[in-house]
Length: 300
Image (cartoon, rainbow, N blue to C red; front, side, top):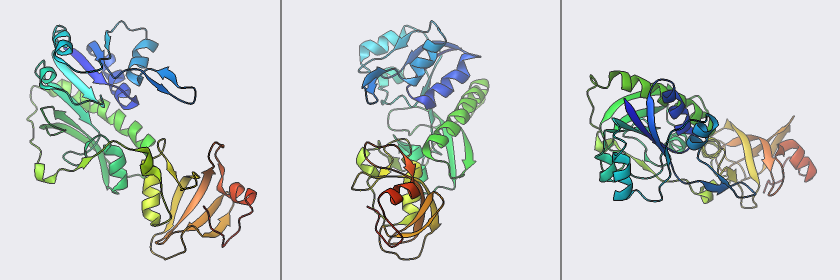
């Protein structure tokens, strides 16, 4: 079976790697190289880096737009199937018509269609996380379900959960390719669907309002954009102390070893690490000691 793989980040690279061992990949389609890091150097997508690290002579396409000319170029490869994982762009009908397009979406569809399913699953406190294999059609993640895998909520942060679901998605892809002739697609129930947008940096700005919400945001936004106060101080390695008691916002309630306990309007949290703007991450206890803050003072 000749496969065109469309995917860009680490999540997609894990799935692509699972296919390289046992299937013929006739092309990779990913987004363009982008500037990243403090030095703003051009960085290739994780999927492209994977192929280059193995010196594989697989054609790599990085189109700015998915126009008809690109669709014709893709069709000329005469692939049997197109596997899509976090490609980052909605596929037009001209591409969908080339071959069956199967998407590995990191949620239990129809919940959390869209760009940030893993983060939104964490923010909503879902009991289960999962990945769905979906027959793509015009529209946003609304095609028929071909299979799924599920894990229970283990309080992983987004980075850890991405890794777990990527591995599961790779396994699900291989299972689908082995059984695709006998699988009966299952239509999604649109009435149960929900949508999630692309994460924005400003969503990481927080106050000490709700302890449980803060902990979920710290998990969901780990890596980027992380959570930070108006001062720019980043809050890291949070755990929930309790979720109901009322406290003065930002009041330091206790200190122990490397942690500090901070009160919220509702609940309180332990914070193990803090990072001031343009500074390195350090233990929360060392930070407040350096600032000469004590129990009863406000963390800002």
